[in-house]
Image (cartoon, rainbow, N blue to C red; front, side, top):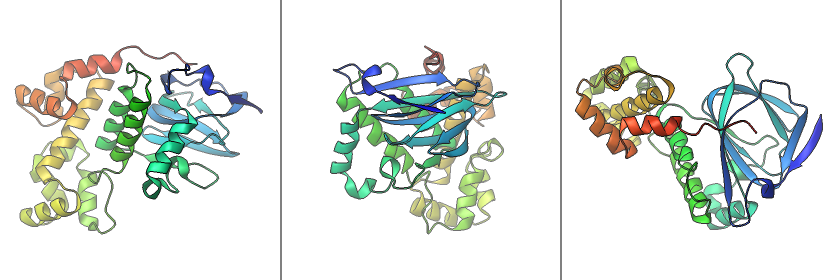
Length: 283
């Protein structure tokens, strides 16, 4: 397979620092693989794809986040049945170098600075995935400034490292299993009671351990799962708001609007409109 080098100047103007694309990948077998003179990351928003990178082959699924270094050589092919849509951000190398110089302890051997042959792939789920998608989509209509892309990158790393979504190695197994179970509508629709039931421990003990390891109460954690699930339904379905609220276990529509606005800073209707606006065409 032939190899091409993609140049940052083909995507980014001289007074710009990054490029954003939301695109559907082709299901046709690729004839060219590429390396590049920039850093890029992408999130699989929908579907799945085959990823050929550095002479290895991997399958990507919804929620996979990849950090691609300039030296990596790769190509993508969408699943022929389910397709694949990704959110892609590329930016100038000097931005990555600047971030590393500022935060070497936090970034060394991680993300773009990973030293293995194949760059890291992080599987995002539930609230973590929805925050990452929302954070990335905000780049679509923003100014392509240095400040904006640095803000985005630091925010994304914060999302990835959010203790409410990254298990503490000391976290009891029963609590980790309860957190995972609470991502399911069958559990979070029952509120904090559902969470405590999955934990299999006393209510007060569960609350103390949640505060210690996650920094949230069972009620706060469950509400986050509800609103993140609502966001996914808003983006991927045509269900009316009342039905979405019901599926999230929230009977009062006014309360649903209030919680959603607190979490996303906008109304459910505007969130749905923004997520469906300006669909990207494949390159």
